[in-house]
Structures are given as structure tokens and as C-alpha cells.
Image (cartoon, rainbow, N blue to C red; front, side, top):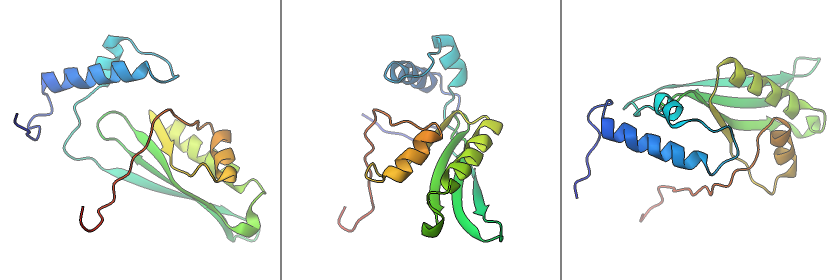
Length: 155
């Protein structure tokens, strides 16, 4: 076996495998299904490089003081514009006043305006306030398991 880096973004065999993967995966999640032709049209071989955008939304009180922030990231890895709520923070003294809900409302408006095809947020399930805020914005837990790798010494 030989492992190589893809040389051409127009590799027919790679496109076919990515299409097969997308078709197979859509059966595992509760969202609208696409036909094989639609999946093939919307699937692209990833480009070697892509860029993204940072959008930091800031909530301010009537005195103009910052009470919370929502950092959103937009990027297109070659499969359509994706969004992530990278951070959501509300100062302790401002919690329970709808700041998180308002920030997430603006984030979702940004995602809709930019025609984001997929959005995610990472949080801990032992943070009920965050879980409630994200769920109220339309995020739902998925069936996926997220594994992480950190470059620790000795690995």
C-alpha cells in the first residue's frame, strides 16, 4: 500500500468516495435527505488551502459596558460554508438576563445571512446553562462521539 497526498482537486475516484461517504452518513442523522445526484453536485474534493473569518459579537448594557461575547468562526473547507460558535461568555453579574440568548440570536442570523451549510458548538454536558442557551438557538446533540488529540510530550 502507498499513501500519497492528493495532487489534483479534480480526482474522479476521490470525488466518488466522498460522495459515497456523504450518502452513507446522511442515513445516520435526522435531517433532509438528498438524492445521489444532489450529493454528487454538492460534494467537492477539498482544496489544499482555505481561509476563514472571525466574527466577535459583543453585548453591551445601557451604559455601554461589555456584558458578554460570542465568537463565531466561518470557513469553507471545500464542502460549503461552515460555522462554529467558538466561544460564548457572559459576565457572571449579567447572567440570567437573556444576554446569551441575544448573542446566539445574532450568531444564528449571521449564519443564515451567509448561507452556512453546517454549524456546530462545543460545550460540556455538565453546563446546563450553556446547554439550554445552545438548544434555544436550535443546536441539538448529535449521535457522534468526538475524540480529541493533543500534542503531548511522548506521543
